[in-house]
Length: 64
Image (cartoon, rainbow, N blue to C red; front, side, top):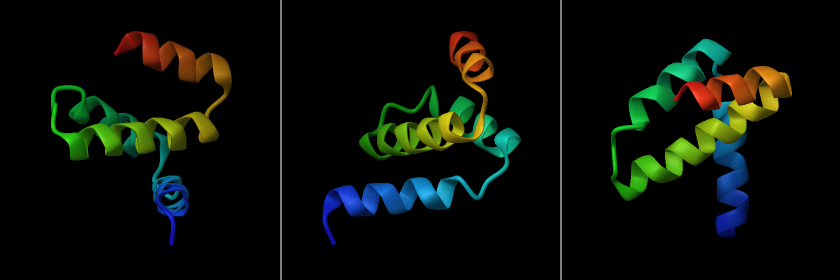
């Protein structure tokens, strides 16, 4: 399995979480500078973007 396939699988798994859960996880990861947290932050944001209307997603990102 390639890194890209793993990343896509991670996003698919994250998309199973509710929007509220994703927002909570993203907020928690804002203060964590570890490489793992950075990867998971990107995964969670991508999953959130895929589940939310664009305007709501942009408003959430701006609130961070």
